[in-house]
Image (cartoon, rainbow, N blue to C red; front, side, top):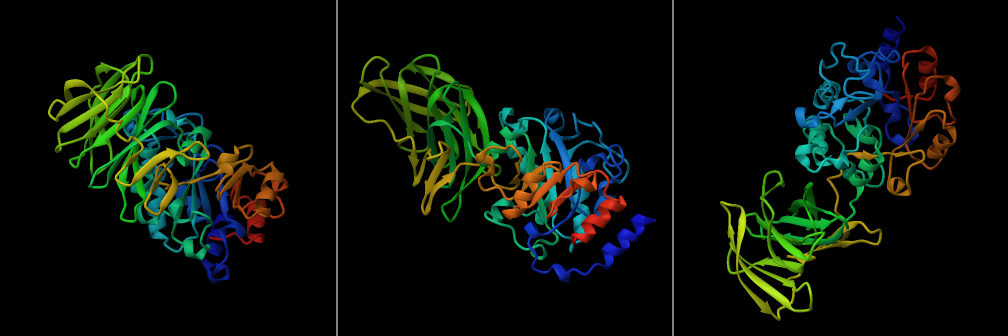
Length: 456
């Protein structure tokens, strides 16, 4: 009976009293491990929670079965653990299916207060070598395709959030959990960056990790000169890469072995629709160091210049791209006095390591922009987190018992989540913006959030 009274009050509550209230000064009904429903606590289904005013939903996700499902799995200690499948919750553990519940509810209730959808990342996503294996680009794509026009991108609120009423009908995805995944979502480390851009705006950046592996970023230059980085992945072993791309999207890269003074080449193809690169096999073609490469005399002809492994002499090769075999046929090896081809600049785009030792680029009026995934999700700063995660963070979180962290976050104007908020004794002054409980319908909780003006 009490829950029906709550629902009636939520329907009758006027919206206008909160017209220009900020998220940082507001309180929202919130649940902890929302997917667990009545298995852990008394929360009910996701739809029931939303119907009863909950505006912060938490989903724990794992990449354990991504290669099988092409999706992440919901669960606390692993896929399916403590997941309440009571209808209308999904019968599966797939993230897309759980997103669909939130998306459909939001579409049916377009004036709702902004929903914070927390993804507690339980596994390290940075050890997934590419999009197909479930790296952060894949998570971005699932978020974008599942929540469509209701999604507030983090990049659309770089400094602060609009007012609550301006955000009605919106969903904000927030990354919590694994620190390594969160850090790489905000920036990337690397050494010896190289870049190639063609006349269609397709762009490829390569770098090594300072030890063994070679990585790529691929994207498109936008009309304002900025770069939208679309895909990221590990493609080979080695160091000191260089890269060239022609206007048909064919890519040729050269690099040195990480163990020997030998150089290799590899061919790739840029997919204009997705930004993904399909790579051919790697092939050794000479001894040497500091390789560089460029397309010359048309779309398929190349020239490579490197240094001798034993002295300062430069050597050159002519190459012909065989697109059918995805390889370069190298001929005409000879000495040359020509300098190396420029590796860190191409068609007005420069790549380098910034003052924080992170990969960055400059293009037109954009100077010192970090090379990162599209900032679809917000990255949460948790109690005990690094200064790098705190830098620029809008959302904070801590266990509800960490009252000092919560009150300080409120003091500096940061919306903060206090999880395991399962007793009135854990209340702070002011209250956490998102007091995430396992018992949202208990009278003490409802009285507390109502007294603090919880917004629906």
